[in-house]
Amino acid sequence: MKIRTELDDIRSNLARLKYQLLGIKFELKLRKCGISTKDGYDSSELRDELG
Image 1 (cartoon, rainbow, N blue to C red):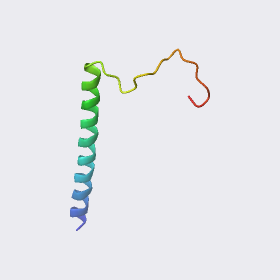
Image 2: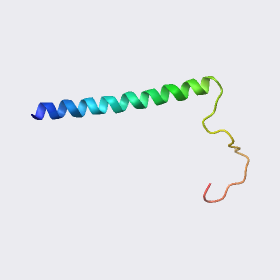
Image 3: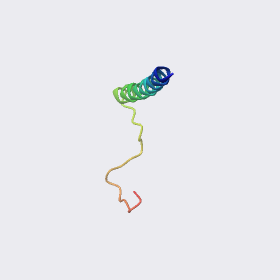
Image 4: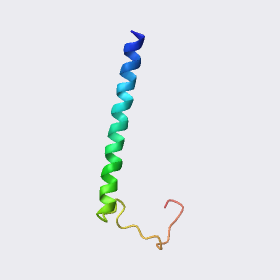
């Protein structure tokens, strides 16, 4: 049973990594199209301690 538990853990980690990779690939495609995920940010705007 220990091997089965380890295999389940590996499968779970692999699924999580695949999901994260899809997110990274999607963000890269957005960047290539010039679409920012943080539209509206102006680095010259004054900020307070909360951002």
